[in-house]
Image (tube, rainbow, N blue to C red; front, top):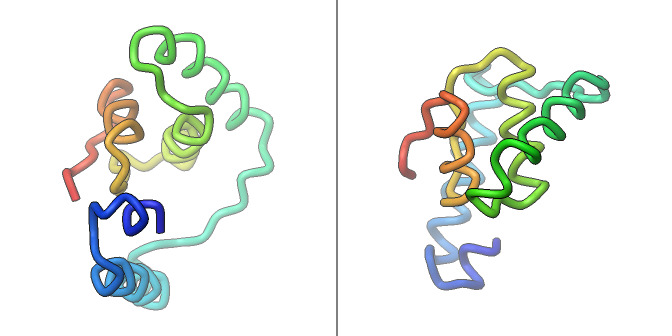
Length: 97
C-alpha cells in the first residue's frame, strides 16, 4: 500500500492487483514457498556487497531478488523501481508494471 500512500497508484488499482495475485495463487500461476534456507540469505548478502554500493538498494529488495534466484525463477514481478533495477542487474527479467 506504499504506492497508494505515495499516490503512484489508486486504492482501486491496488485492490485489483491484490485480487489478481490471489487468483494467480489459486490457479497455480504463483506459488508460495518457504525460504528458511541459509543459501537464500547468503545470496542476499552477496547481492548487498555487489549491488548496494552502486545502486543504493534496500535490504528487503535484495531479499526478494535473492529469493527469486534461489527459487530458480527467471522473472520477478514488482512495482518497486529499486527492486526492479536490482533484479535486472542480476539477469532476471522484471517487466515494468
